Length: 120
Image (cartoon, rainbow, N blue to C red; front, side):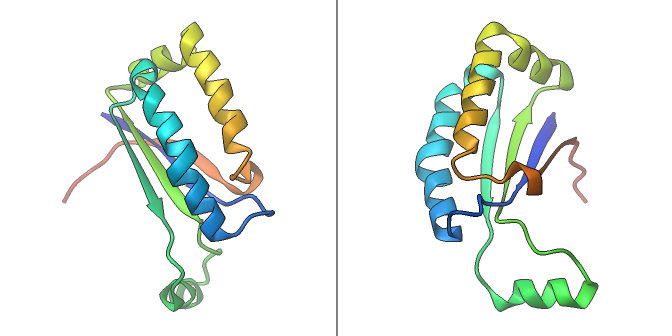
């Protein structure tokens, strides 16, 4: 299995709470209703909490500000991901997902990459 990880920064015109609400109640269900067509096997949203611990962690290590959330999408393989996204249906869904993401994500301050998991 491989995983698409997206580290997300909210759109500058919305609050973290609005970001969370839109992602959970609109984008997440939209994604899940199309996950099978894209070949996605699992989808997890991790929402950053408002906590002074975040500031402490950042300050203790000289890190950048935290993301507002992390999305993780599992696929059987790179080939399965490419197949799902390159099909006509996958391309149409990808375009619709991107348009919807513009409602709550600042893509210029977000990141996405493919990983494999190693458990210890």
